[in-house]
Structures are given as structure tokens and as C-alpha cells.
Length: 93
Image (cartoon, rainbow, N blue to C red; front, side, top):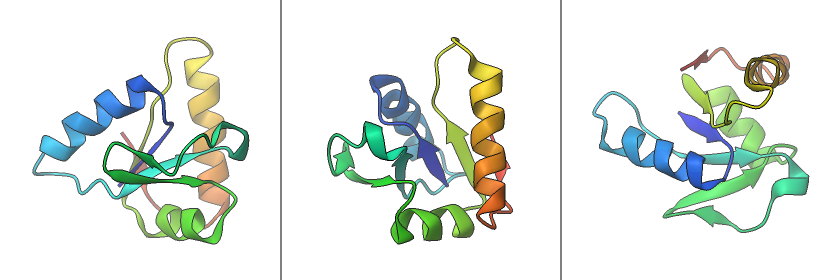
């Protein structure tokens, strides 16, 4: 699984998924313009237009869009459709 986002909200969500026995969090993905480091905590951060991110997107069973309430549903829908177009078959949590 991966998390889309790199904010403190994304990092908090990541800590919950890391403690879960149900999910294997492998990293974080963001739009290129929000790429401000190479990691979030101890996990890698990738710009979504890179081969590494596309591989994570295709190979992950689950993803979580870490977004706060502003335009939440539209934003999550846009990201779901974007990841689906990259060949993903994962489920959004």
C-alpha cells in the first residue's frame, strides 16, 4: 500500500498503517510540485510522474489519499482515476 500525500496528516495516517498487521506501507507519493524531500519519516517519497512511483502504484493493492476536508471527495476521485489510468487495480481505503 502507499499513501498519496506528504503532510503531517499523511505522516499520522502512515503511523496507523505501519502499526496495522493488515497493510504493508511501502512509501508515499505526491504530485511533482509538492516534492519537498526524499522521505516521509523512514519511508521513501516519490513524485507520481516517476517510474518508481508508477511501479508502486501498479503493484500496490491499497492506497490512501491523505487529504483534509477541503474538496476532499473531488480530490480523492481525481487521484483514484489517475492511478487507475496507470494500470492500478488497488482499492482506496
